[in-house]
Length: 85
Image 1 (cartoon, rainbow, N blue to C red):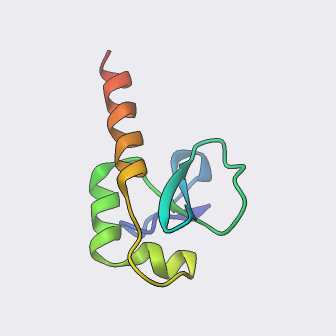
Image 2: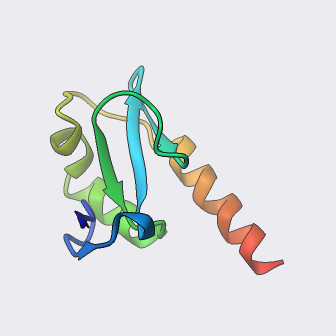
Image 3: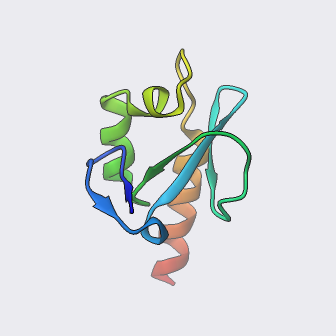
């Protein structure tokens, strides 16, 4: 069980997307193999937006400063595009 940093609900790890920080940029860890501390979020733009507003990513990943979400948003857009086909 893991907690989504966006909506704070506890669900199975397999239904969440693991996010890691590399060089100030948040990256989706689809295979759950990247090194470092991870934060979990539902693969839903609403939860990602909520986590960003609450500043949950820096707190969960124990880093300071602003973090870029471009890679995570691109991954979610691609995922929605692929599921609609």
